[in-house]
Length: 287
Image (cartoon, rainbow, N blue to C red; front, side, top):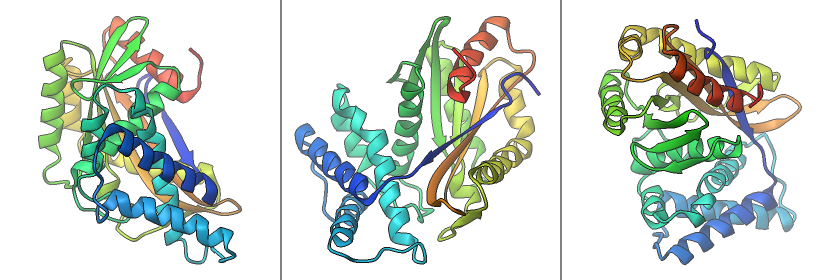
């Protein structure tokens, strides 16, 4: 265990009207960037769904938690927009938006896709910026600025336990190529949350505990491999993250992401301070 063995939960809830506005803003961003969005693409279908859901609700249609799938897809689109709309000011926005339109983004799909890989990258980028950690989309995926220097983040989304070590090695190599201290950020929901399953929890704290148990079990499973990368200094931290649609009693459907930081206790003082800066911002423990 080290000072960085901590976790944070990021949860999202939105109204139908919020989701519709997000959908419309996302449509506008694609148009402004000159990026075509095929109407049969997964993203275009989620956008259409969010708009129709709000229109139906305004027209008097009852939308109930007893059929949570429409609600989950609406919230998921709102999250995609939250992560992607800041691309408006990015010089490479057309490339990122094009990637987001390639392949499945359905929250119940476990099919690998470039779109889902890009979404994980954008989610983390936006969360870092929102928490006061200036970040840009650059090699390997994200570069975070801290008072002690820049940190490289390689984002990997896993779809197979058997092939997990390949993305690990790719991410580590990408970080090493930058010459910066690095974080290997791994999203594992496609491994640990069964398709078409809605997780239930009595409170948001219980939801966080359940998701983080997935993260810790994953670290335990790949302990030796990850420890080898950490102990040799090839990377500074592993961030393992799980996202799921959760039905929380008295709150309803929430899309939640729980992220766990794990590192080596013998990390150098300089790198430790950099990682602590990021951890403190993310976990709300100060600056």
